[in-house]
Length: 157
Image (cartoon, rainbow, N blue to C red; front, side, top):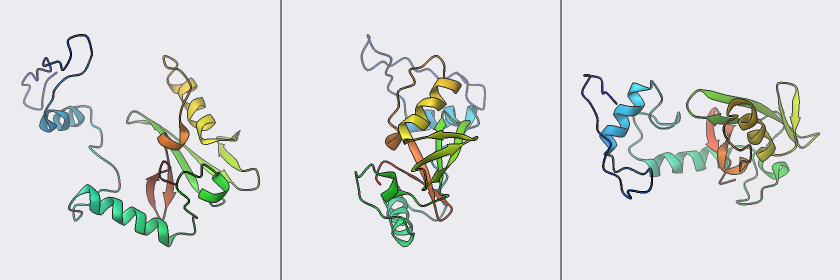
């Protein structure tokens, strides 16, 4: 792999010789993301945010101000989402599906198709955009919902 100055980055320090895990510095990871022209962290990062803890605190506060009822671990879409709320699932950096929660059907509508669960929504995304992978997915862990213009993980809902 090459960095911006065409220097070779070596990722040869394996943690275990039988596994595909490598010891890499944060700077090398940032360089890798810059090379593939991706976003480094999450869209909600602002320059004035000092650290991840403050970002998480801000997201929790924004979520509390919204009309979403948070019951951690409930996995009940009726308690977590409001009608018309956007739900998204992303594969990699550029394959994103965005659907809308339909409270009358208690499911997600994306591109005129209905999904009765977050896992079904994410699984179908995998089956279409990642045919080399299993289509099983934990939608609650992998999806995000929009709250006051910010995308937050559905995992903590």
